[in-house]
Image (cartoon, rainbow, N blue to C red; front, top):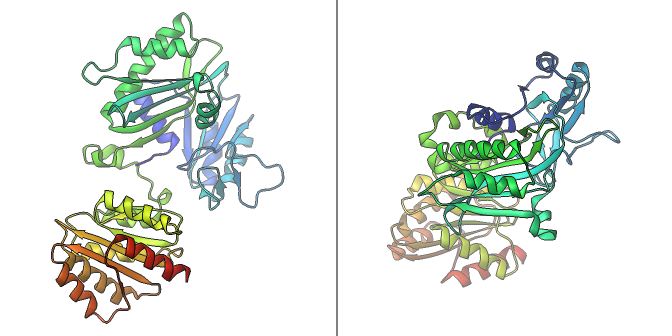
Length: 397
Protein backbone atom coordinates (compact mmCIF):
# COMPACT_ATOMS: atom_id res chain seq x y z
CA UNK A 1 0.00 0.00 0.00
CA UNK A 2 1.32 3.44 -0.94
CA UNK A 3 0.62 6.77 0.73
CA UNK A 4 1.01 10.42 -0.23
CA UNK A 5 4.09 12.54 0.45
CA UNK A 6 2.40 14.62 3.15
CA UNK A 7 1.31 11.45 4.97
CA UNK A 8 4.80 9.97 4.72
CA UNK A 9 6.31 13.15 6.14
CA UNK A 10 3.87 13.09 9.05
CA UNK A 11 5.09 9.60 9.93
CA UNK A 12 8.74 10.64 9.65
CA UNK A 13 8.03 13.69 11.80
CA UNK A 14 6.62 11.42 14.51
CA UNK A 15 9.96 9.59 14.52
CA UNK A 16 11.89 12.83 14.93
CA UNK A 17 13.10 13.09 11.32
CA UNK A 18 13.64 16.63 9.97
CA UNK A 19 10.96 17.58 7.42
CA UNK A 20 9.53 20.90 6.27
CA UNK A 21 6.39 22.34 7.81
CA UNK A 22 3.45 21.98 5.44
CA UNK A 23 -0.31 21.81 4.97
CA UNK A 24 -2.40 19.49 2.81
CA UNK A 25 -5.50 20.84 1.06
CA UNK A 26 -8.26 19.20 -0.97
CA UNK A 27 -10.30 22.29 -1.84
CA UNK A 28 -9.13 25.38 -3.72
CA UNK A 29 -10.68 27.74 -1.16
CA UNK A 30 -8.51 26.18 1.58
CA UNK A 31 -5.22 26.95 -0.19
CA UNK A 32 -4.76 30.59 0.86
CA UNK A 33 -5.46 29.85 4.52
CA UNK A 34 -3.08 26.88 4.47
CA UNK A 35 -0.30 28.89 2.84
CA UNK A 36 -0.84 31.73 5.30
CA UNK A 37 -0.07 29.40 8.21
CA UNK A 38 3.48 28.89 6.91
CA UNK A 39 6.37 31.29 7.45
CA UNK A 40 7.75 31.64 3.92
CA UNK A 41 9.41 33.54 2.27
CA UNK A 42 9.20 30.62 -0.17
CA UNK A 43 6.23 28.30 -0.52
CA UNK A 44 6.46 25.03 -2.47
CA UNK A 45 3.21 23.76 -3.99
CA UNK A 46 3.18 20.01 -4.69
CA UNK A 47 0.61 17.85 -6.44
CA UNK A 48 -0.12 14.73 -4.39
CA UNK A 49 -0.40 11.57 -6.50
CA UNK A 50 0.99 8.06 -6.09
CA UNK A 51 3.69 8.49 -8.73
CA UNK A 52 7.16 9.93 -9.06
CA UNK A 53 8.49 12.49 -11.50
CA UNK A 54 5.92 15.14 -10.52
CA UNK A 55 8.30 18.02 -11.04
CA UNK A 56 9.02 16.96 -14.62
CA UNK A 57 5.42 16.01 -15.32
CA UNK A 58 2.85 18.00 -17.25
CA UNK A 59 -0.88 18.53 -16.97
CA UNK A 60 -3.20 17.49 -19.76
CA UNK A 61 -4.30 20.45 -21.89
CA UNK A 62 -1.76 22.61 -20.06
CA UNK A 63 -1.15 26.18 -21.09
CA UNK A 64 2.03 26.85 -23.04
CA UNK A 65 4.99 27.09 -20.70
CA UNK A 66 3.03 25.93 -17.67
CA UNK A 67 5.08 24.36 -14.89
CA UNK A 68 4.87 20.74 -13.69
CA UNK A 69 3.42 19.31 -10.51
CA UNK A 70 5.94 20.95 -8.14
CA UNK A 71 5.99 24.76 -8.15
CA UNK A 72 8.03 27.31 -6.21
CA UNK A 73 6.15 30.47 -5.23
CA UNK A 74 7.11 33.68 -3.41
CA UNK A 75 3.88 34.76 -1.76
CA UNK A 76 0.81 33.34 -0.05
CA UNK A 77 -1.38 34.57 -2.89
CA UNK A 78 0.82 32.99 -5.56
CA UNK A 79 0.92 29.68 -3.66
CA UNK A 80 -2.87 29.66 -3.39
CA UNK A 81 -3.24 30.47 -7.09
CA UNK A 82 -0.90 27.65 -8.15
CA UNK A 83 -2.73 25.20 -5.90
CA UNK A 84 -6.05 26.16 -7.50
CA UNK A 85 -4.55 25.61 -10.96
CA UNK A 86 -3.52 22.05 -10.12
CA UNK A 87 -6.49 20.73 -8.16
CA UNK A 88 -8.85 18.57 -10.20
CA UNK A 89 -6.56 18.35 -13.22
CA UNK A 90 -4.74 15.30 -14.59
CA UNK A 91 -0.97 15.13 -14.12
CA UNK A 92 1.04 12.93 -16.48
CA UNK A 93 4.53 11.73 -15.45
CA UNK A 94 6.84 8.96 -16.63
CA UNK A 95 5.40 6.76 -13.87
CA UNK A 96 1.68 7.40 -14.44
CA UNK A 97 1.67 6.45 -18.10
CA UNK A 98 -0.19 8.53 -20.71
CA UNK A 99 -3.49 8.32 -18.81
CA UNK A 100 -2.04 10.29 -15.89
CA UNK A 101 -3.59 10.72 -12.46
CA UNK A 102 -6.09 13.28 -11.26
CA UNK A 103 -4.77 15.63 -8.58
CA UNK A 104 -7.19 15.60 -5.65
CA UNK A 105 -4.76 16.85 -3.00
CA UNK A 106 -2.15 19.57 -2.83
CA UNK A 107 0.66 19.91 -0.30
CA UNK A 108 1.94 23.41 0.43
CA UNK A 109 5.16 23.54 2.45
CA UNK A 110 7.90 25.94 3.45
CA UNK A 111 10.74 26.31 0.98
CA UNK A 112 14.26 25.22 1.97
CA UNK A 113 17.75 26.52 1.25
CA UNK A 114 19.69 23.74 -0.47
CA UNK A 115 23.44 23.32 -0.56
CA UNK A 116 23.55 19.69 -1.73
CA UNK A 117 20.99 17.08 -2.84
CA UNK A 118 21.37 13.35 -2.13
CA UNK A 119 19.42 10.18 -2.85
CA UNK A 120 18.51 7.81 -0.01
CA UNK A 121 16.31 4.75 0.18
CA UNK A 122 15.60 1.86 2.50
CA UNK A 123 14.07 -1.25 0.98
CA UNK A 124 13.79 -4.99 1.43
CA UNK A 125 16.55 -6.72 -0.53
CA UNK A 126 15.06 -9.90 -1.98
CA UNK A 127 18.50 -11.45 -2.43
CA UNK A 128 19.57 -11.15 1.21
CA UNK A 129 16.06 -10.96 2.77
CA UNK A 130 17.40 -8.01 4.74
CA UNK A 131 16.75 -4.28 4.88
CA UNK A 132 19.13 -2.42 2.60
CA UNK A 133 20.31 1.18 2.49
CA UNK A 134 20.82 2.70 -0.95
CA UNK A 135 22.40 6.15 -1.19
CA UNK A 136 23.98 8.40 -3.79
CA UNK A 137 25.39 11.88 -4.12
CA UNK A 138 23.20 12.29 -7.22
CA UNK A 139 19.96 13.31 -5.51
CA UNK A 140 16.97 14.73 -7.32
CA UNK A 141 17.69 12.62 -10.42
CA UNK A 142 16.30 9.34 -11.70
CA UNK A 143 18.24 6.76 -9.70
CA UNK A 144 17.80 4.26 -12.53
CA UNK A 145 19.71 6.59 -14.85
CA UNK A 146 22.48 7.04 -12.28
CA UNK A 147 22.73 3.27 -11.79
CA UNK A 148 23.06 2.72 -15.54
CA UNK A 149 25.53 5.50 -16.33
CA UNK A 150 27.56 5.98 -13.13
CA UNK A 151 27.02 2.97 -10.82
CA UNK A 152 30.09 3.91 -8.78
CA UNK A 153 28.06 6.82 -7.39
CA UNK A 154 25.65 4.48 -5.63
CA UNK A 155 26.33 2.72 -2.32
CA UNK A 156 24.14 -0.20 -1.28
CA UNK A 157 24.48 -2.41 1.78
CA UNK A 158 22.27 -4.64 3.93
CA UNK A 159 21.68 -4.58 7.68
CA UNK A 160 21.85 -7.90 9.55
CA UNK A 161 18.51 -8.13 11.40
CA UNK A 162 20.13 -9.99 14.29
CA UNK A 163 22.28 -6.97 15.12
CA UNK A 164 19.99 -4.30 13.71
CA UNK A 165 21.02 -0.78 12.86
CA UNK A 166 24.39 0.31 14.25
CA UNK A 167 26.12 3.72 14.14
CA UNK A 168 28.68 2.45 11.63
CA UNK A 169 25.85 1.97 9.13
CA UNK A 170 25.06 5.67 9.37
CA UNK A 171 28.73 6.57 9.04
CA UNK A 172 28.97 4.55 5.82
CA UNK A 173 26.13 6.62 4.40
CA UNK A 174 27.68 9.88 5.65
CA UNK A 175 31.09 9.15 4.15
CA UNK A 176 29.52 8.13 0.83
CA UNK A 177 27.66 11.46 0.73
CA UNK A 178 30.80 13.41 1.60
CA UNK A 179 29.49 14.73 4.92
CA UNK A 180 31.88 16.15 7.49
CA UNK A 181 32.03 17.11 11.17
CA UNK A 182 28.65 17.45 12.87
CA UNK A 183 26.96 16.43 9.65
CA UNK A 184 28.20 12.87 10.18
CA UNK A 185 26.64 12.71 13.63
CA UNK A 186 23.36 14.09 12.27
CA UNK A 187 23.41 11.49 9.50
CA UNK A 188 24.01 8.62 11.94
CA UNK A 189 21.06 9.83 14.04
CA UNK A 190 18.76 10.27 11.04
CA UNK A 191 19.57 6.87 9.53
CA UNK A 192 18.73 5.24 12.87
CA UNK A 193 15.36 6.98 13.01
CA UNK A 194 14.53 6.01 9.43
CA UNK A 195 15.48 2.39 10.08
CA UNK A 196 13.33 2.34 13.22
CA UNK A 197 10.34 3.73 11.32
CA UNK A 198 10.89 1.23 8.49
CA UNK A 199 10.86 -1.77 10.86
CA UNK A 200 8.12 -0.67 13.24
CA UNK A 201 5.69 0.35 10.49
CA UNK A 202 6.37 -2.70 8.27
CA UNK A 203 7.44 -0.60 5.31
CA UNK A 204 8.68 -2.27 2.14
CA UNK A 205 10.15 0.89 0.64
CA UNK A 206 11.17 4.30 2.02
CA UNK A 207 12.65 6.72 -0.49
CA UNK A 208 13.99 10.19 0.32
CA UNK A 209 14.78 11.99 -2.92
CA UNK A 210 16.20 14.39 -2.30
CA UNK A 211 17.73 14.28 1.13
CA UNK A 212 19.25 17.74 1.36
CA UNK A 213 22.16 19.38 3.15
CA UNK A 214 21.32 22.97 4.05
CA UNK A 215 23.81 25.84 4.35
CA UNK A 216 23.63 25.65 8.15
CA UNK A 217 24.92 22.05 7.98
CA UNK A 218 21.63 20.39 8.87
CA UNK A 219 19.99 17.55 6.94
CA UNK A 220 16.35 17.49 5.86
CA UNK A 221 14.05 14.99 4.14
CA UNK A 222 12.78 17.21 1.35
CA UNK A 223 10.61 14.52 -0.23
CA UNK A 224 9.35 11.14 0.98
CA UNK A 225 7.82 8.17 -0.79
CA UNK A 226 6.67 5.24 1.36
CA UNK A 227 5.16 1.85 0.56
CA UNK A 228 3.94 -0.68 3.12
CA UNK A 229 3.75 -4.46 3.18
CA UNK A 230 0.09 -5.17 2.49
CA UNK A 231 0.29 -8.46 4.39
CA UNK A 232 1.18 -6.57 7.59
CA UNK A 233 -1.52 -3.90 7.49
CA UNK A 234 -3.68 -5.82 9.95
CA UNK A 235 -1.13 -4.74 12.57
CA UNK A 236 -1.37 -1.05 11.66
CA UNK A 237 -4.86 0.41 11.77
CA UNK A 238 -3.33 3.90 11.72
CA UNK A 239 -1.54 3.19 8.44
CA UNK A 240 -4.55 1.50 6.85
CA UNK A 241 -6.56 4.63 7.60
CA UNK A 242 -4.22 6.57 5.27
CA UNK A 243 -5.23 4.52 2.23
CA UNK A 244 -6.41 6.64 -0.69
CA UNK A 245 -8.57 4.38 -2.83
CA UNK A 246 -8.93 7.03 -5.52
CA UNK A 247 -5.24 6.48 -6.38
CA UNK A 248 -5.68 2.75 -6.97
CA UNK A 249 -6.75 0.89 -10.08
CA UNK A 250 -10.51 0.17 -9.63
CA UNK A 251 -10.02 -3.43 -10.75
CA UNK A 252 -7.17 -4.01 -8.30
CA UNK A 253 -9.23 -2.41 -5.54
CA UNK A 254 -12.20 -4.67 -6.26
CA UNK A 255 -9.91 -7.71 -6.30
CA UNK A 256 -8.45 -6.84 -2.89
CA UNK A 257 -11.92 -6.88 -1.35
CA UNK A 258 -12.28 -10.52 -2.38
CA UNK A 259 -8.73 -11.48 -1.40
CA UNK A 260 -7.73 -11.98 -5.03
CA UNK A 261 -4.16 -11.34 -6.17
CA UNK A 262 -4.73 -9.13 -9.20
CA UNK A 263 -2.43 -6.73 -11.04
CA UNK A 264 -3.59 -4.86 -14.14
CA UNK A 265 -1.29 -4.94 -17.18
CA UNK A 266 -1.43 -3.44 -20.66
CA UNK A 267 -2.13 -6.51 -22.82
CA UNK A 268 -5.22 -7.94 -24.49
CA UNK A 269 -5.54 -11.46 -23.02
CA UNK A 270 -7.10 -11.78 -19.58
CA UNK A 271 -5.78 -14.56 -17.35
CA UNK A 272 -7.37 -16.49 -14.50
CA UNK A 273 -4.93 -18.90 -12.87
CA UNK A 274 -4.44 -20.58 -9.51
CA UNK A 275 -0.98 -20.17 -8.04
CA UNK A 276 1.47 -17.31 -8.53
CA UNK A 277 4.10 -19.44 -10.26
CA UNK A 278 1.60 -20.89 -12.73
CA UNK A 279 0.23 -17.39 -13.34
CA UNK A 280 3.72 -16.15 -14.23
CA UNK A 281 4.26 -19.12 -16.54
CA UNK A 282 0.89 -18.45 -18.18
CA UNK A 283 1.81 -14.84 -18.89
CA UNK A 284 5.18 -15.92 -20.27
CA UNK A 285 3.69 -18.43 -22.69
CA UNK A 286 1.11 -15.91 -23.90
CA UNK A 287 4.00 -13.62 -24.82
CA UNK A 288 5.82 -16.57 -26.41
CA UNK A 289 2.90 -17.06 -28.79
CA UNK A 290 2.90 -13.39 -29.76
CA UNK A 291 0.38 -11.65 -27.51
CA UNK A 292 0.41 -9.71 -24.23
CA UNK A 293 -1.32 -10.56 -20.93
CA UNK A 294 -3.89 -8.05 -19.68
CA UNK A 295 -3.44 -8.98 -16.04
CA UNK A 296 -1.89 -11.17 -13.40
CA UNK A 297 -4.62 -12.97 -11.47
CA UNK A 298 -4.07 -15.69 -8.89
CA UNK A 299 -7.38 -16.89 -7.45
CA UNK A 300 -5.51 -18.87 -4.79
CA UNK A 301 -5.90 -22.38 -3.50
CA UNK A 302 -8.99 -21.76 -1.38
CA UNK A 303 -11.14 -19.89 -3.87
CA UNK A 304 -14.91 -20.32 -3.74
CA UNK A 305 -17.44 -20.20 -6.55
CA UNK A 306 -18.23 -16.60 -5.52
CA UNK A 307 -14.58 -15.53 -5.64
CA UNK A 308 -14.11 -17.07 -9.06
CA UNK A 309 -17.24 -15.27 -10.27
CA UNK A 310 -15.89 -11.94 -9.01
CA UNK A 311 -12.51 -12.65 -10.59
CA UNK A 312 -14.17 -13.24 -13.94
CA UNK A 313 -16.15 -10.00 -13.59
CA UNK A 314 -12.97 -8.06 -12.91
CA UNK A 315 -11.27 -9.48 -15.99
CA UNK A 316 -14.20 -8.70 -18.28
CA UNK A 317 -14.49 -5.15 -16.90
CA UNK A 318 -11.18 -4.33 -18.61
CA UNK A 319 -11.98 -2.81 -22.02
CA UNK A 320 -8.57 -3.89 -23.32
CA UNK A 321 -9.36 -7.59 -22.88
CA UNK A 322 -9.99 -9.26 -26.25
CA UNK A 323 -9.84 -12.86 -25.00
CA UNK A 324 -9.64 -14.84 -21.75
CA UNK A 325 -7.50 -17.83 -20.79
CA UNK A 326 -8.50 -19.83 -17.72
CA UNK A 327 -5.62 -22.08 -16.69
CA UNK A 328 -6.23 -24.23 -13.60
CA UNK A 329 -4.10 -27.01 -12.19
CA UNK A 330 -6.25 -28.44 -9.43
CA UNK A 331 -4.43 -29.36 -6.26
CA UNK A 332 -6.04 -27.73 -3.27
CA UNK A 333 -8.22 -25.87 -5.74
CA UNK A 334 -10.80 -28.17 -7.35
CA UNK A 335 -11.46 -27.91 -11.06
CA UNK A 336 -15.23 -28.24 -10.59
CA UNK A 337 -15.29 -25.14 -8.32
CA UNK A 338 -13.49 -23.12 -11.01
CA UNK A 339 -15.86 -24.43 -13.65
CA UNK A 340 -18.92 -23.51 -11.60
CA UNK A 341 -17.54 -20.02 -11.01
CA UNK A 342 -16.78 -19.46 -14.70
CA UNK A 343 -20.25 -20.64 -15.75
CA UNK A 344 -21.96 -18.47 -13.13
CA UNK A 345 -19.93 -15.43 -14.11
CA UNK A 346 -20.53 -15.82 -17.83
CA UNK A 347 -24.26 -16.19 -17.27
CA UNK A 348 -24.26 -13.07 -15.10
CA UNK A 349 -22.06 -10.72 -17.13
CA UNK A 350 -22.18 -12.33 -20.56
CA UNK A 351 -19.30 -13.40 -22.78
CA UNK A 352 -18.30 -10.97 -25.50
CA UNK A 353 -14.78 -12.31 -26.18
CA UNK A 354 -13.23 -15.75 -26.87
CA UNK A 355 -12.74 -17.96 -23.81
CA UNK A 356 -10.23 -20.80 -23.60
CA UNK A 357 -10.31 -23.10 -20.57
CA UNK A 358 -7.59 -25.54 -19.58
CA UNK A 359 -8.33 -27.71 -16.53
CA UNK A 360 -6.11 -30.37 -14.97
CA UNK A 361 -5.92 -32.04 -11.58
CA UNK A 362 -8.46 -32.59 -8.80
CA UNK A 363 -11.98 -33.27 -10.10
CA UNK A 364 -10.90 -32.38 -13.64
CA UNK A 365 -13.47 -34.64 -15.32
CA UNK A 366 -16.27 -33.13 -13.28
CA UNK A 367 -15.02 -29.66 -14.13
CA UNK A 368 -14.91 -30.42 -17.84
CA UNK A 369 -18.41 -31.87 -17.68
CA UNK A 370 -19.73 -28.67 -16.08
CA UNK A 371 -18.14 -26.59 -18.85
CA UNK A 372 -19.22 -28.91 -21.66
CA UNK A 373 -22.85 -29.06 -20.53
CA UNK A 374 -23.16 -25.36 -19.78
CA UNK A 375 -24.04 -24.35 -23.30
CA UNK A 376 -21.26 -21.77 -23.30
CA UNK A 377 -19.10 -21.09 -26.33
CA UNK A 378 -15.87 -22.25 -24.68
CA UNK A 379 -12.71 -23.47 -26.41
CA UNK A 380 -11.23 -26.45 -24.58
CA UNK A 381 -7.45 -26.83 -24.24
CA UNK A 382 -5.46 -29.97 -23.49
CA UNK A 383 -2.45 -28.32 -21.85
CA UNK A 384 -0.90 -24.90 -21.19
CA UNK A 385 0.83 -24.63 -24.54
CA UNK A 386 -2.33 -25.63 -26.38
CA UNK A 387 -4.38 -23.14 -24.37
CA UNK A 388 -2.02 -20.24 -25.05
CA UNK A 389 -1.84 -21.04 -28.76
CA UNK A 390 -5.62 -21.24 -29.05
CA UNK A 391 -6.41 -17.99 -27.21
CA UNK A 392 -3.78 -16.04 -29.16
CA UNK A 393 -5.12 -17.44 -32.42
CA UNK A 394 -8.71 -16.60 -31.40
CA UNK A 395 -7.75 -13.02 -30.54
CA UNK A 396 -5.42 -12.36 -33.45
CA UNK A 397 -7.49 -14.26 -36.02
